[in-house]
Length: 346
Picture (cartoon, helix red, strand yellow):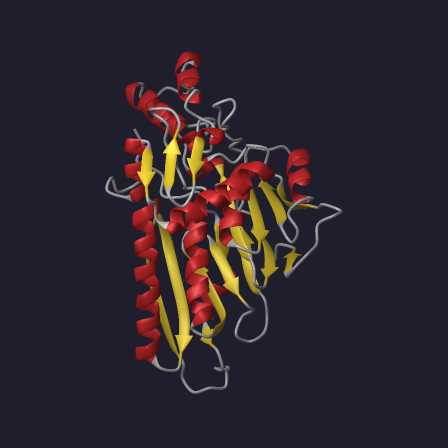
């Protein structure tokens, strides 16, 4: 059995490699010797990076430490990698009294994404993950999904309408139900880090806490460049988009695969119990990382027509598909652009 997936992320920020980082409010490129202060670690099982420039290295380091502490605190709420987390406690007991406000906030955002996508985005698919894990652990080397009767049992525990959440209590209706927030929590933490940096006066930054979000443009006024990676072993250069004040999230079935073909992977259809198409990646650009994160997860399970229908109701949000044939944007006639421009591969 393969280890748990670290994350389904295939977006890179091209500018990060150039050494461009984050400039605080009032600091221009002409100011003397701003220090690059950066951190790299793991957040919710994925690689996370924070980069900032600050003219006062001590003050910048304190700011960086503050946002890392906050990210770690949020991780103890949302993670499935630590059995003592708040989410694991909810999954174990089926009820949580006086839940952390951040968990309720995330569940409210899940509810919005569930309605917007017609139920395709559904955090209650964790029983499907357990079903697939048990199946492939017991049958090493097989390529077939779990048998229909096991999938049916797992599917009876899936359904966002069976979750009740408010500021006082969260309840999972059926014993055995469980939530996964892997399709939104990293985006939520990214947004929180950006909020803290904005409150500290930063006007230009790039944060990657598992999903990517920019605050403003690059310090020189140019947009940030995001390279949208295609399928594995694709030797062509990735499509690049320019983004300003936007978040980017990518979901791809080949992020974690139970079988060699990738037909059985970590992105589950909450209706059928089957998995996303392993031959493509879906990238979403939107105003917040949590929203982009949730939509990229859902879009990995949708056909193009369904994606376009959702985009009609998501102003300022754009979707890109990457396959072995190349990358392209799905364009909605009613959608508006708020700061991202596609660029041809160079």
